Length: 145
Image (cartoon, rainbow, N blue to C red):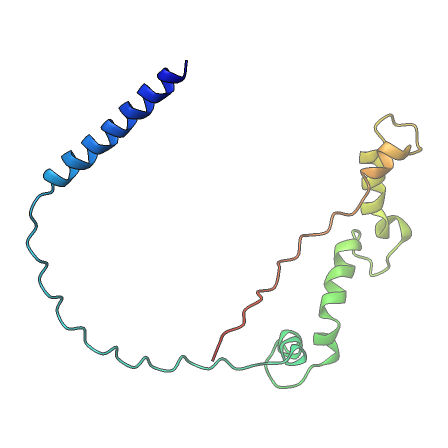
């Protein structure tokens, strides 16, 4: 049994030696590579433009100042609230009734009440959950000077 291991070892040694001899003899002669052309020095890059850093309040002020007169009037200040109110005031009488105010919640309740029992069980109640939009992750960029 030991003789099989010895014969196998000799055979492997002969195969490796033959591969070395064949690979050494078959190497093609290569010409030396030409010298690479000289590389020009990189040109200095221009400075990037500087962005103005408006504060959060400055941006908010510009959003509210619709007529761009550098002041926010009461009408401009209440504009978003008025638009929201007008969406709810379905009959346009300038008075917001509870039915008008709660129309979205009533519709959400009716959509969730699958068995139309007038009550929500836990599974139905889960459908009334407010799904918040995913926030975009802020870039964590730190540049080395």
